[in-house]
Image (cartoon, rainbow, N blue to C red; front, top):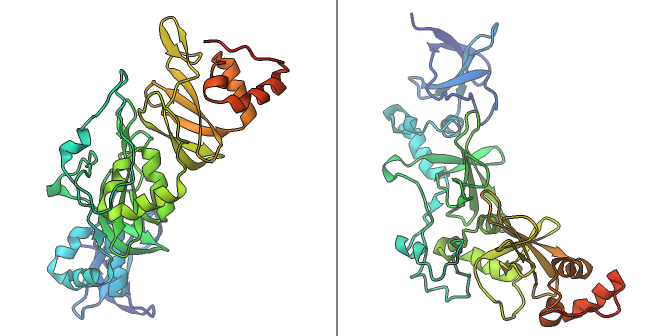
Length: 376
């Protein structure tokens, strides 16, 4: 026997009964409004055109019921539950039309030749790719690179974008912020992924999804600064060459400090530089503090490396490198005293003459060494 439940209108008056339905239910329970797995939901339409939201409780001693809702609320519930297929049903054609009217569209990212992404100009023993952002003509997009996206065009998945508790757009999944950590492709956490896209009104959307059970995928509006930060920490600098994201390249050139101009021995990969947790600049990966131990270059421990350089504003950067899986290279801003200490501990006193002569005074004060003897 089909269960029928009581339905109420907007004023709380009983107006009839309707069949039990869970057509906007999903495994982890209701998401958008109620954020609980204590009940499931369904959506029906009455003969007079009104929509009824059905609440089916899983807890004992609670009765299921239905409530008349507006077309806008019905659409929000469909999008919030990712039950997009309901919009293709004839009786919900009005909701599909409403979605086309009120939802913002996604700006399509146009990609270049896929093979260009794998045009390696230089590679060292560890497979380091040589490339760097350059100030190119904004109209020259012939060398755009495509990220390694794993999306089947025939099975495109959609994700609702929520702002202030309301769904304002629907975008396609992508994982263009993922990177390979030596073991797997992810956003830095096993089984989790990130992507970036942009809406037609110019706002940026950060997509986050997970392969883990009981974790909901979601998309959120983020500031340009946050969008740029996500690109840089993922090392997917090629995204800044996409026409749809060219504003982020301008922002990059404006706020991200570069390394001061000097004769860098080897330009391999860029390293993000942090100052008290904030990303402030980028420098070339260096290992000029390493020593040769048992025929291998390292800094004290196998697979660990260190280098020292300086930003264009004069601040010193200590580079932490690693060739171990799941460990990434990065740099931190350090004081002149710390920079001098690292040089002495590494034994590369020649750096005081060749690269950082201004640190000799700091080293002498710290260690009370009258004259530092330089070695070749």
